[in-house]
Image (tube, rainbow, N blue to C red; front, side, top):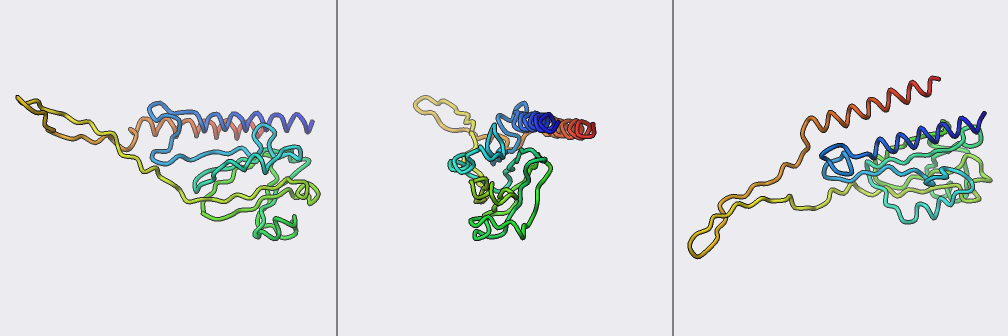
Length: 196
């Protein structure tokens, strides 16, 4: 029974990630304009599991303010604690956690810059590598120039610029409503699914 619940939670998590990362029409691959926020599923397909190589998984990733990290694990077998210091993290000292996560599917928004430490609540699993430190970098808005449309007028011997037009920087209201509707739909669906 516990395996069925874990599989269902993994499926739900996959659907959440798909809906969150799915492009809204007209916005390209993300719903966020100007900055690229990411949703990181810790451990990828294996999730938060003693057989996962969390250190290798996280080694090539950048975490920024506004990103979310998702922990998927069997709540019957595991839970996660957030620690406040590097010393606690390195020694797997879970006696004084800042927070505990035990739902089996936890989403944590990275709202502040700095380092956060997550470890298995089981010291033996932590010592075997089931831990993650996340260095949260500042939100970076790409320094890109807006596409410019230039109208030109031809004279006998030269071409001169008549007017410059700057492309809009925000999506239309209908696209924002579509994205909000999708999030609302997924939230309602998840709540009803979890109530079963």
